[in-house]
Figure 1 (cartoon, helix red, strand yellow):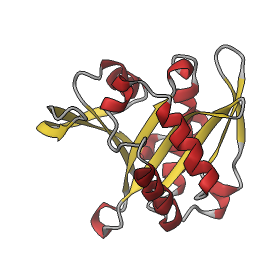
Figure 2 (tube, helix red, strand yellow):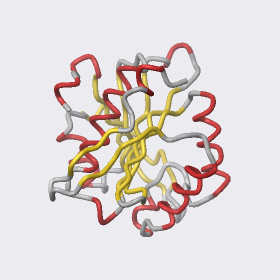
Figure 3 (cartoon, rainbow, N blue to C red):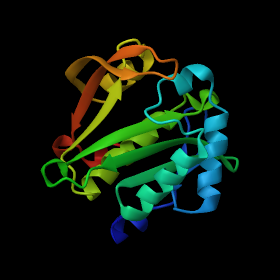
Length: 193
């Protein structure tokens, strides 16, 4: 579950590099947030959907996401602008005792909200969230041909920890290599955000 001290921090207001304000809040396990994520996912283009770990255009998948919010296996942040979901960042944890200090970061910004500071703000908030959840490391997974995502992770301080050959299958059925990129939260402070 989300610690009370984390809940008290949200919602927050930020400013994009173009000067427009946007908010970040905790995703709630509600029908309204489920529907808002589905609407966001349905605005993504085919290339964006190709690389998603799960098919968030599928109502059953988003319902599982909402269940994971309730159990505490997932903590998600939603970025909103003009009453529309502009992006999200999720930290997924495993109940297994031996991996309880590691969380998976999944992040996505809508096409028209890229390159203007939204993703960076979401990641900084996810770093703070990971630390508040007691995690030591966050990881993300990208394919080698996701040059933009890989570059963005590297700029944030992530490093390639593993390369796994034909580890994943995309929406078209094509096998792809995967890079596991990690970030040590021990070195992150809230002043870094």
